[in-house]
Length: 178
Image 1 (cartoon, helix red, strand yellow):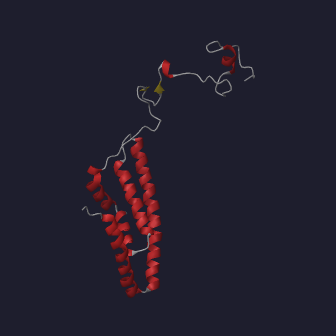
Image 2: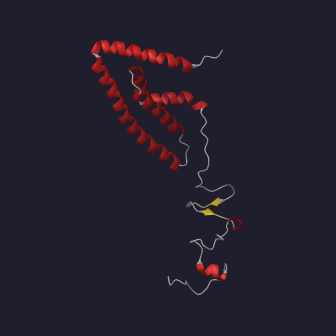
Image 3: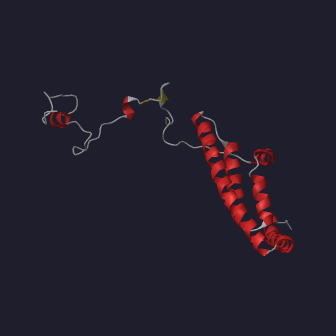
């Protein structure tokens, strides 16, 4: 029978949190213990915002450099988990959350899981589709059979003269005086 870690953690972590509350509360008092839990939640929310914005900027840099931001995405998941752990009341979860905010710890986790993670990319609709050529300045060059005019005469993008005289038969000028 395969050992599953999640049911084990669901049992062990709350018991460890209760034990930590009892021991720490017995040493420093109930109000100081509750104050520490509240303080770690506030610090965690600031750390989540600060590191999240920095990570978002690094992901943008990787994407703009046409690189897959695999490491940054995994770091983002770890920062999200760290924020959830810090917002969860308790000293054990706070300790784990603060550890995940340390970049060296995240890099250690990344090195241990990167061979088992596959990051797949897909077209965002902004690059050229299959079979289309793209020039160096980001302009997609369409072949003649890949382009057609909008046949809707009520479209604001259709030329009034072209609607009146047909495609390729330009009239004298615009009828609205512009």
